[in-house]
Length: 459
Ligand code: PLZ
Image (tube, rainbow, N blue to C red; front, side, top):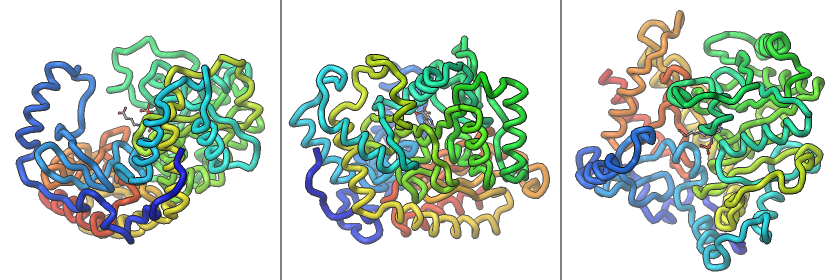
C-alpha cells in the first residue's frame, strides 16, 4: 500500500523533480545505430503483426520525455497510447510499486485476497460518475474490461445484443474485434467474428453537421429497426472516441442515447479506457456530457503504466454474475493495484485535473494558429489532454473534407526525426492526436507545435 505522499506532481511548478531533463535532444540519425541493431534482432523473433509506430528502442522514460538506447530524447505526445497519464515513472507510483513488490507479488485475489484490490474498487466507486452503490471487477487490459462488461450486461438483462457506434474501437480479442469499426488491420482474416454485435451511426459533428438530438434520433431509429431494443443487452460508447480520431459527439447525443437505454432496459456502458482517469480535465469524460453510465470501463492510465483494467458498475448489475463467474489469474495484481492507488492519490494531491485543462489551453490556441496558416488542417477538437487535428486534402476543408492520410504520415515521420513522438488515428488515418502525459510543460507543448509547424511547411 502507498502511505505517505511526496510533493504533488504539478508539472509546471516543479520541473526539477524529473530524473530526465524535460527537453528534446537528437544526437544520432533516427533510428540510431543501437535501435537499428535491436530492430534486426526483433525482426527475427517478433511477428510482423506486432508493428511499432517508431522503431526507436526506449531505455528510460520520465515525465513527458522518453530516452532511446542511442541517447536521443523525445517529447512523448502519445504516452504509450494514453497510459502514462500522470507522467512516465511518476515517483509516487514507482515507490508504491517497489514497496508492494517487496511485500507480495501474487496470490490471486480469487484464492486469497489482499487490501490493494479492495482499495482500487473503493477509489473507482468514489471517482466514477454516479452517486449510487458500485462494485468493481479488476482484470488486465482494456479489451478484457469490454469483454467482462458485455458478459455481465448479458447476464443481467438476459439478452444477447451488443450495440456499438461507427468509428468505435474496443480491442483485439474475438468479441472486441467484432465491436471495432475498422476491419483493417484489427480483424482482417481473423474471423469468424463474434455474433450479435450491431453497429449504429455515430455523431461526428465535423462531417455530419447534425445536432446531438438529430444524430441520436438517427442512431436510435437505426437500432430499433435493425435489432430492436428488446434484444439489446447493452450499448457500448466511448464518450470521446479514441482510435476513431478523438471524435467529440454533438451536445445532447450521448444523454439522449442513455435516456433511450434506460427507458428500454439496455445497460449503458461507457468505454472510458482512453478518455478516463484525468485525461480530459475530469476524472471521467462522461462528466463533460452529464452522463451517469450504468457501467464504466477503465484501463490504460489507471495504474501509471502497469497492466490493470476495471469494470465498475451499479452494484445490482455487477452482482448478477454468479460466484466464480468473474476473475482471471492476474486480474488486480497486487503491484498493479498498489500503483493504481498511487495514481488516484497523485491526481487528487497534485490537482492534476487542472493540468489537463492547462494543456488544452496552451495547445489549442497554438494549433489554431497553424490552422490559419495551413488549409490542410480541417478540424481541431478534443478536451483536456486529448486533442486532435483532422487533416484534409488542400482546398476541401469547406466542401468534401477529403481525408489526407498522406499528410498525417509525413508530419509524423518528420516529427519523429526532430524528436517528437506523434500518434495518428482516425477511421481514414487522417488524424493526429495529442495524447500527452499531464507532466507535459507549456514550453514542451510550444516546442512540439513548432515542429509540427515546420512539418506542415515542408508538405
Ligand atoms: N477501448 C477506447 O482505446 C485501446 C490500442 C492499442 P487494451 N486503445 C489502444 C493497440 O493498437 O492495440 C482501447 C481503447 C478503447 C478498448 C481498448 C483496448 O484496450 O488494453 O489495448 O486491450
